[in-house]
Length: 196
Image (cartoon, rainbow, N blue to C red; front, top):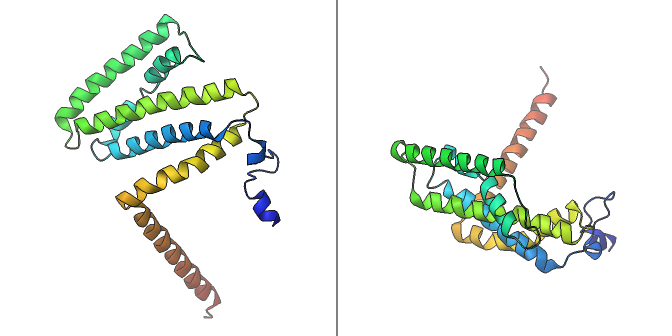
């Protein structure tokens, strides 16, 4: 029964367990929803955008993070003028790239742009929400943040993966890899034991 009691312990040096949590679970539900939404939209946007276009959009993450940071009540960040100028130049570069890519890329779609913009908005909430959590409870450890958002995110992630069939693809891929690894190991073992 010692395992069941300690199964949530991540690292013996950090000593994290749910009993030592400083934040309520509802905090991590919000964080996980934003995290899973961001990852989901980013991944799905690749069905409508090519990778360079998505990468260009994701590289502008600094702008939504700056804007959100200025409006979140617990942060209310203020940035110097040169940082706003840099962010605006970054967005102008993105607009020029997007216009050029829309004309030359066969895998460019407005739906993909909307998805990646949604992911950027969620990313901006994510970074700022994490900072708010750390500011409100300075005892919060990174291990708690990572563990709890992952544990809460798993149930949020499984239903869409079942609906899209990705969980079955992942299961088949893992089982094929395991079987292939096992067969390779058996072949190597037989090869080593062969006598010439």
